[in-house]
Length: 145
Image (cartoon, helix red, strand yellow):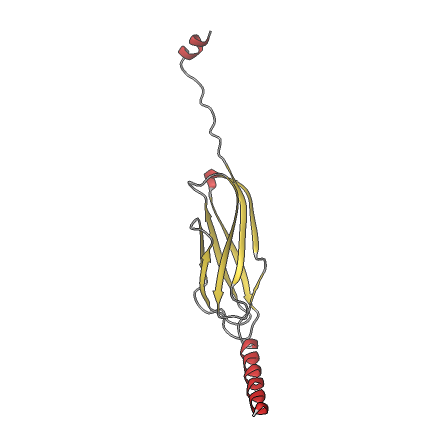
């Protein structure tokens, strides 16, 4: 009886391994992007993460979710065939946010071998300093002296 149970579990394991081997697989050029420093005036920045399906089956992205609402992922909706490329565009919108360093993660759920996959963006939004307007009126100057 135990021999039969062992044979069934081995067959199940072998079948799972074949299924896993026949899945799609995302291979990214990079999983991190640093926007560097940018001003509040240009507070919307975008980066495209490009991946290749190096697996043996079509790869489908089911969901991409960001760690906060200021980061919006958009991704290839149709299946990515083996050997073909897809992309995930990440837009960070810092308008109305405090200046400073940020780090955000994006979680990608797919039907491939590795799920979830995490992508990361970072950068530093610099406060825009508005130039001081020249005083056209002499009254302030006269009141000082």
